Amino acid sequence: MKICYARLVTLAGLVTGSFNAQAQMSEQLKALHFAQDFAWAEIILANGDTVRESATLYWPEDVLVLQPSKHTLPAVLVKSFSVRQLQAASFDSKRRYDFLLMRQGYFPGNALFPIGPELQRPNKPSEGVTRVFHVCRWSRNQGRQGFQTLGFFEQLSAGPVVLLNRLALEKQTSYVYGAAVSQNVKRDGLYLVQPDGRLWFLQNPEKDIYAYFQRCAPQLREFARRNKLHFTKAHELAYLVNYANSLTAPTQP
Image 1 (cartoon, rainbow, N blue to C red):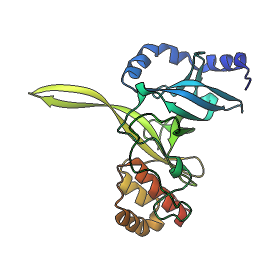
Image 2: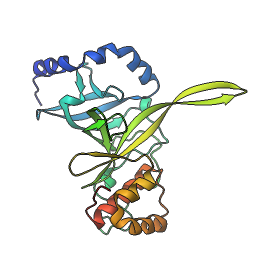
Image 3: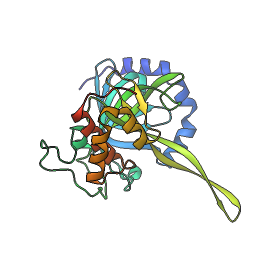
Image 4: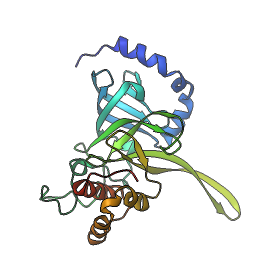
């Protein structure tokens, strides 16, 4: 599809000065696999245009860099995007990437899905796995208060209340023979996006899910117990959100 790159570059140039200033830090984050490469991406821009290219996602800066053109797309210029063919350099075999059925509303026992998702995590990048990202307004103070900006979030469930994930990098310190050793580790930042677009940060997923869906909390507890679901596993948390959506229209506590 044709796209006016002159307009794209002009718009991006107005808002990406800070990205250029952080280029060195971005390369360090990429070395930590905190910047992710995608061999195929379909990007829906805020102005309605569509771009299809390889892309690199820089989580801290909320910027997509198109490859090989090197055009930069900050979150303010993007509405949503989907990706396939996660390249091996950024693939983490401990994470489960295929949330297709969960995005469609799957949960154990849902009669609309006679066949559930594979129980095994993929052991290598799969060309058939698609991930979907949206742009949401949020506060870096865990999404509740303070100055808000636009950022990228991955969709993990269906709606109307949707489970989102945003990767974060945090420093952990351990002590070896009395010496402090620090390392950067990735963690999931899980959120609920409400029908009005507001984000609800799941600081304690089990406690916060029951609080948000308080009207159906007893059914959720029984559902989690019966299916042996864990609130620390993103795909099982997506089951819970889909099940809660099927029971009632929730209200914020």
